[in-house]
Image 1: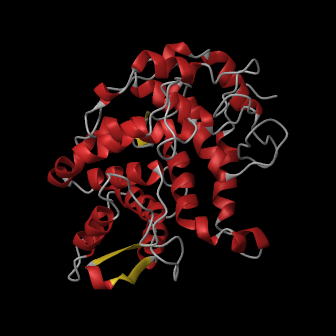
Image 2: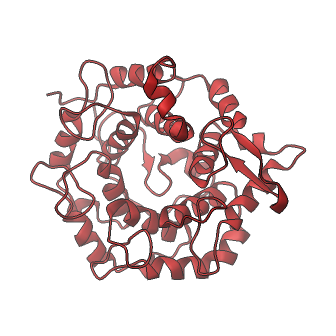
Length: 338
């Protein structure tokens, strides 16, 4: 079991994902392609390997996923997960994050008003009750609420955020449970991933006052198991991805010290594939880019040496968020020397 982060192997693993186009798995995951590229790029930037993938190739792919026809009647358009896919809020946020990461949001400033149409797409996803849908077909989830706020924030839409803030916060509060956590909709079970999107949404709107911070932080700290790993809700197995969902929420609430950091660090490092690279959900399982990204994100917040700071609200490199004037009052553990 390695006690170090196998950066070179993880970089090679991420680079190989784009080349395995003959694998069946590549074609079965086209609905996640934009998200997967965001996960891979974010992991590479946090591991201080921003040039491991070709910038122009990434940006050309992002723009090739623009869905021109999805909302033509409503003056909006957005991004799909892969060329030819329908626009969806999940892919659209990843597209915006990738453009922001590579300092290329100006690619939206086109003669056909891509930026304005994309902003309208996110705004049109909000319902009268403050909830958000993923596309024009109506699925609701607190994930989509956070996604819209994240993207509008990155796109510099301060006035729009202020205009929708009150009813958005009201909906988040309706999704809060007796244990302090949040669910996907009112009455749904508290879940660490939904907690993160709700906490981060409130942070973007500067409304963390709506949270019972000690109660929620206690619920989050209770997600740590004897293995050191974190789970998403009671009675579930630990999973590396919660190293991001739980830690980022605690970081935003400034309660990161409530976690046994060395034990969690050991759990994440034990989930590495020491031969082929990548990080799995737990020791012995197959790695994937999703868990690689969120394992690296968790290690960054834990102060692991050699990593770049992660912004826990946006799940992007912290310096990129700071340059846009969007940093909130979060904390991370001090970066240790290598």
